Image (tube, rainbow, N blue to C red):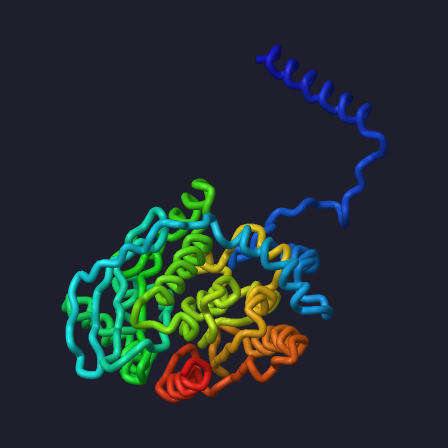
Length: 388
């Protein structure tokens, strides 16, 4: 026992001696006498998060110069961080089944969304002579995974999902199904499931962390897979015989709204975009108590490395000078009003530089995190003006 203690003391002395001899100058503590003992807050933020924020200078943000030159410089880097691959497989669509819903035909169509995944979409085709404008509908997160595309359009093939879809419609959409409302207006509508929802449902809320980690370890990311699939889905919409490829739009709510402005930046086929309830700055969202700090759903909006280079509104502004309509809710606790307004101002600077500020509509409406009938009417009237 004595020999072991003596050996340990000799080892400590040797390490201390070697350290003191190799150090050119003594190490001074940053402040005070004691080291940090509780560096992580109850909300799982490091106590030094303000110092980390100060380092986020966004070197690829719009700098006030030529917006086209800025986009040419920033977009390739953003694409490299956001898109895990370039897919070339043919869509090879096949109709699974269909139903006549009066003003339109509703179909389930299987297609290759990426080189790895073949999925089922709901496609609504108006009756009459086309081609028609086409719209891709991007669903929310909502911590409800049994329905994805069915949040937008009533399913006819599954009674349990139909009941879930009705509940979702009553909670967020004033009892309407927005995809069907667009089809009645003469749009071909396509809705798909993101990885983890509907036909592609996973293992529940808590399992999202593992899925996100596993995809990073497979050289991809959860956000990247979603962006890649949305990009391909927009190209699928444009490829349909019934669709005018020069009149393609995208509509998104909540997480789907994030997906919508992201897609507008990445997709050359998207001409007009409706974004309801997802836009703010990193500074305004990365604060104690915000939902973005919980992990889980946040992984769908987290591209590794991108936050060091660009803020959320910078990425959205890569879509300029396309037509875009942003809604936010005055009482939306997920997106603080001041942060939303800061993001809007950043985006308007880019559209103004293109002399196209009339193409960017940014509004804060009464109410919370919803896509109610009045917002839908305003959005779809605006889409008519852009795509018809």
